[in-house]
Image (tube, rainbow, N blue to C red; front, side, top):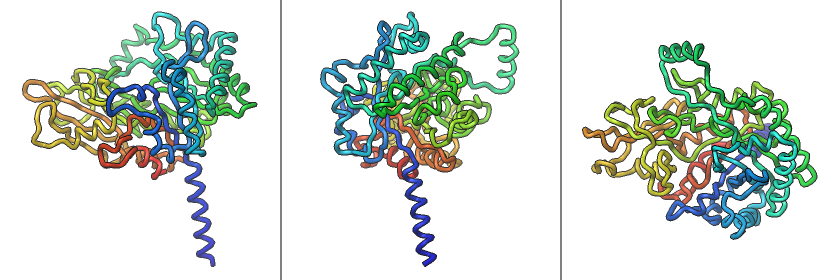
Length: 434
């Protein structure tokens, strides 16, 4: 009898643990208008949605003239009723809550003008307009809530340096000063907390969800009053990836989303630091989701980059060539990376396979590389996420008692099962580990 009781108790603990683990899935609507095998239509999402509790649909922007929300693609989202198509996915997945995300680094506006995301914060009238337009959009298309992937000014890139270089740079900064990210950061911090409170008040009667997504390279210390904001949001998704990218760091390739701090690197560029910062500033652990990418970042290796592939790789020559599916230089989806790893070893030049180096200590992630040839051609270095490393991060979430995982995003996972025949392998590995 006692054995039965213990079994039932353990089973209950197991079930509660599963229910407590939050799986947030992002879906970038831009993937619907891609050409070829990279196009992700709503029906392609079906195999994934059984694993998702939240589907975050991105992205909507802010009109800089009237401060209302504006669809990123009016023809797709409104004229072709894609918003309604997405929210109708609940018919087959009643457990699914569908959020609309604003910003997400996808809202392109004239950089010579004022940032509309800051302009909204600075005026009560602008905030009122924004809140009312958000409420109208959510109601008209039956979204369950709003995700704030707010486009604050980004931190300036930090170069990977040894201790001597770092000391010299610090010494010089005493005389030249350091670059300011936002001169009005303290005001914007207070104003953003006010906006979140106003949104929460406006959403209360309809029960809309409100969440926050911290984009990579946005300093929460500058812009988020955590004790004020965290009680008002349902959860926070940390953009704990893209710490190193070929756009920001064209000359140095390195791990893009390590769990723990790496030797002689920026100590903030890892998941553990980001999590601890929020925990130390009064955020409940069950409201924190860590972001996991379904892609990798690539750099071109030169003859001067060495032949071992061991990071950091200096003297790289900017973003790697665009893949055949996503077609974005410096970014490769998981199926694009998998294909390069599986190529015939007899191939050469640009068709030669990449050499994979795993992460037996489960701290930093995998990478793969192909050294440049004698003429300095065809070199490539890729730091990436794969199913096994994503599962390791899910294990970190479980061990720390965090809220869950946010996958960025479904369209970059192997949604067609090209690599191993299984659709959405990164998503599956996360969910099963949780």
